Figure 1 (cartoon, rainbow, N blue to C red):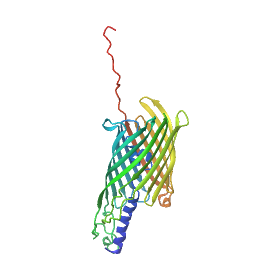
Figure 2: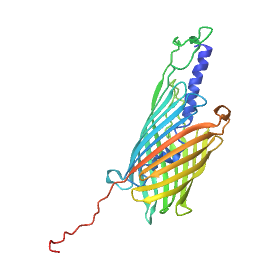
Figure 3: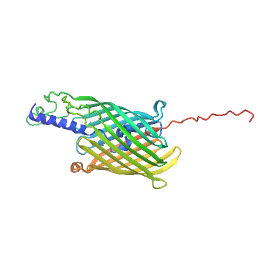
Figure 4: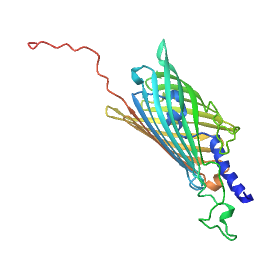
Length: 337
């Protein structure tokens, strides 16, 4: 392998290493519950929840990075109170090498209500599954593909790569505390640990290259300030290897309608990510649907190249609430009454 080919190959694996350094996550962390904390499985008001998230960024700098997530979870599964379960699928694509990360996990949780106060409970959760990481060399350019004057598409790169794909199992765990203080007042706090087993991640079968454990924590508090207005401050912290991230900010919720069949609310929010970006959010509730839109504004040293443009993110959550028939016995009145 010649000098230029080594540089190109180094660039490919530099991308894979930096992608490894931080797991998939979203700016709207609160709208991607199973990515946020495994203990959030089944932790909602309803019977079934379906969530989708999409993020696209760096269109103005390089090949766009895109991330997609889809999850489904249920409450009181198998008729067992306080037992939650779900599945989650993630797909992330980055750069010229089409470096792709695909994750499929299953998750389970168990809630422990406070005996004296059913509005409070602690929930523990575990998530596990398989991760596939795959890259392509087709769009990369190597020294052998230059004819001495210019690059010639279609020439063989004359390289022999050891691997283009790898699979490994992962294991995550988390715990949350929830306190429903009032009808419109709620406190939620949680911590989680991802990649507990530190699975091996190497294209050269190097046992020393492993996925770093990731610690994360979040907190949010919702409280009313007006008959129709709630404030929801929130924070998120993540630490993985030598990388860390803080997000602090909040949203305002305006209740548009509480009519049966037309329950509506609108949200506006502003958040800041430490030394990196800020983002604004607009969200909307319609009955059992919740929609979110956010846009990142780049504040890092890359802003000279990005012109301050970061990424756009979309989210949608649907919660299905099943009707529960009354358990009261009905007395059939005689015909003559």
